[in-house]
Length: 411
Image (cartoon, rainbow, N blue to C red; front, side, top):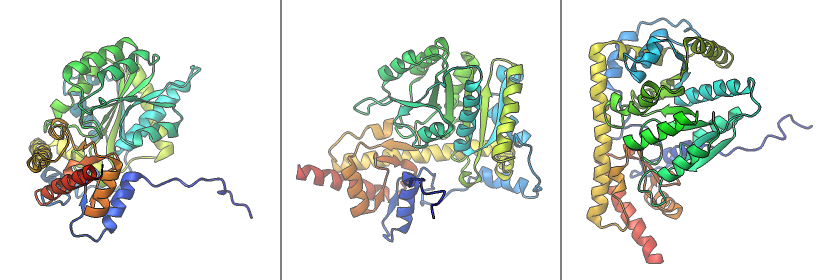
């Protein structure tokens, strides 16, 4: 008998989660996971931020009733103040529509669904979504699943020495008005290259002049430099200084270590209070039909962190700890490779920012590291720096050195 599902094709598993699955099944005592982007402490264990631990004590007696459809009001208000600053005109003028979302992925999907619905009203064509190449592996499928055409543009220079501004500006100047640009607000994933302040100003002018719509994927604010305000400069420049309409999708998975709580926010900055009210009403409808209302615990934890002066100060110190450890591991890996005299250019390890960097190794080398030395990284040789610690960084450097030299010997 024919099945309804006979025509459903097999979909390969997500590469990063499959890599973690393989790592977990590896019995080797020397295995190292440099694939999944989750912060670990210096002993390689998940870190519960002291600020989060303190906040959890404050919310432990909360009830289990439903939240409003748009989410916990205190969380939304405090998250917007955190994003745009306490005196931002966009919030004082009530030009921001927002809703709680299921971390960064859910925020991006909600933002895309909202924009797709807006594009369908009175318009003949659906705008194209432009994403960087390379980019986070989920960006393309999130927006394609909604129905958008997605195009990539070269983001990193051919020699992996920084941002390819020629490609970026050419894409922006040729993109039709109302095209959607997905920008990484800070700590570009996976390249680790961020535009400079002057480059962002060039990008912002083109976006403003050509009436393009930016979406800021803000997954790592506070973890790049150790200071949230510093890392939020780009989106605040576009929104507060250039006065552009935009979407901001923020996740607290990384910056507060709340990976499993799936807590994020989707915010739209609009041109008027009336427009914001209409957008927010549509967001409420989208949330209602998708999840009815969002989970409460993570939202209460974030609200408690941001709403208590002492806990918020502790969180600021926690961000310094995390960003400092990541920077330290970048330096340790670089110094290890230099000390070993490993053939290649490694300075970019310390020049790039955030949790990830791309080493520039071949797929053959990546497979060799995985199979012979039990070091797991993405096929692109993207490395999660947070997976390094004082106990394994020298081992990783030595194995990279051996792999590069073995390849040279065969050539």
